[in-house]
Image 1 (cartoon, rainbow over the protein chains, first blue to last red):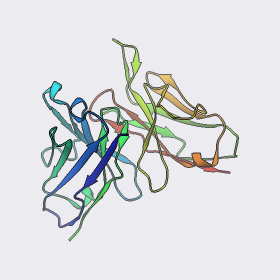
Image 2: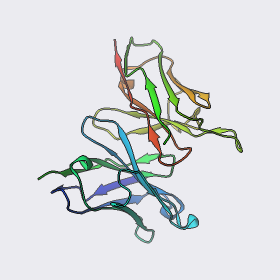
Image 3: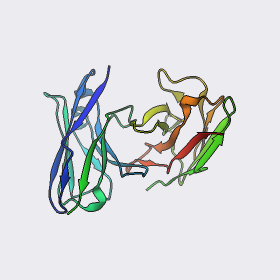
Length: 117
Length: 113
């Protein structure tokens, strides 16, 4: 069974940094692209970005709203994907979901990031 | 960016009746080289993460009941629930994965009348 477990969400001040982790199990992690989707309280879904597999040189893609501030990386030996978030803004407040593949075929339960002074 | 527009924003349907949700993309998501529409549908129940229901516009994910069906091509798509059940109360999203940035529709809330 595919499982994705996010961690690292917290309350942080604007301008600070935070790193989220997504620990995967139940599939061959290195074969898949991994990504992040966020959902602000009471709002719809917003794609954040993804990282391709090693077969595709672990290239990354990002939403315009986070490009230059957020970085996605992966450690295939540990089956973990990361989302490094820098220069956080209040509008980054959301539940952050880890997702598998570009088809988003599996989702974690999410981890909450609150950006507030 | 490809803009995904869903309609209606919400709908109330009686148990056992049909529910239809529309999704329109601002440009075609049909890839001509493989004739596939890069369009997915997700279901999100309250307090839960989204769940993939349909991909390639009309292929049901494993385990999804056959009362859910997807249709359409190019820029116009439809999700149909043929006979609404109580457990289908949720928000439904369409999403294109034809190109980055991946984009979602605004969601359609389905309730029981």
